[in-house]
Length: 490
Image (tube, rainbow, N blue to C red; front, side):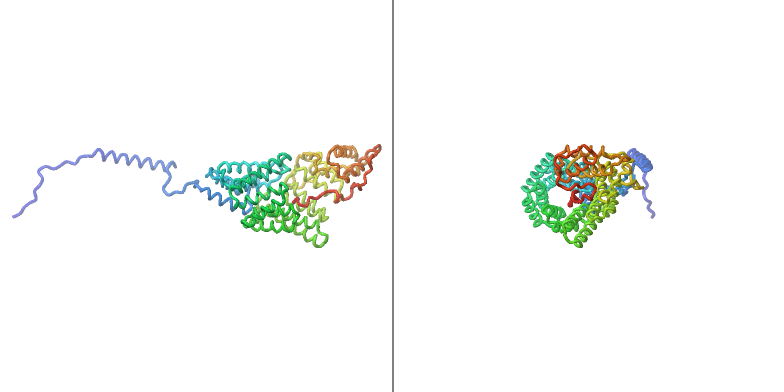
């Protein structure tokens, strides 16, 4: 018997679900929007890296430390002024942007800014950079007033701002007093802070408290002798105590830690030159001069590699060759410094002194005129012995009479009087310069006073000296005994 499956009497009709249809419509529209968004660039594909990845502040700080050790404190730019490679300062500024409340980052930035001022050319640039360092250090102290480190760096910035070439005597004392206060505060907060001890030693030395400065730097050396700052300050303290050999050893230790900070080589080279200047043995003297030249050349080479336009190494080389009696090569190096800064009157004064020592008095007068009276771009070329392809004619503003420029005035007046002829009259200018010297407070040097008498005797037949000088006038001879070569100026 066959049994068939029972069929349903009623069959259910298929019905459309309105919710399901609404879902599909939304899905289709969303897909169309997504495709068009990708085409327009409004929607980025998954797993694509972002165009500007976010960096941590610590990453920038590590970059800044590496750039500092390499000697690249400022950005390196091409001939058009475009940045080719960022320096330590830029890296730390970026770190501070990412973490603006981090006091240590601001203090680290200030420390590097202070050191970078040693690589700047011209008083305006140096003063500007030191002011930036001071602002960063102040900000660090505001962010963390209980940090020994921030107060130590603030003291460091204040001390370097106490530069007599940048501020008057009252300003120097104000900066030094504030620096001492900050350093004392740093040590009070943490008497094991090595940098605080070192910077305090530097401040005390600048205040001529040499015994105290020596005591504090010795404490810093015992605390941590692995820091460049400690050896740099140690060298500076020894320098002021005329221990030039010890200073060189300390600078060498600082250089071993940071071998690309060119100003350290300048300081070590200056100490070698000072040793040579005081040596009675000609062979030893020559060897010391050669060592100083090696350090100056290293500084110039590092600057060239880093794209730093600093004339100081070449000026240091010129001063060394001048002391060696090799005036021609010294002149070439001063001319090189003028390529970097063609409007700096001091360089023309240095050049005039070297022309004088080399007995090239006519060109010396042109150089001294730029240094003392100032000169237009055309005369600036004459004052430097002619402009080559690398030279830029410049307007030069003359230097006022000061303790550091008195010898420029003295030699200029002497040369003018000696070279006066009917065809080339110079006596009017010579007498005017002599009067400027006589009216100043800088004519106490008996040699200078004697020179002025000779100038007046040559150019004014009616002049009678009421007090005949006892010193030998230095008119036209080498003036080596009269012109002080600051042996610790790099």
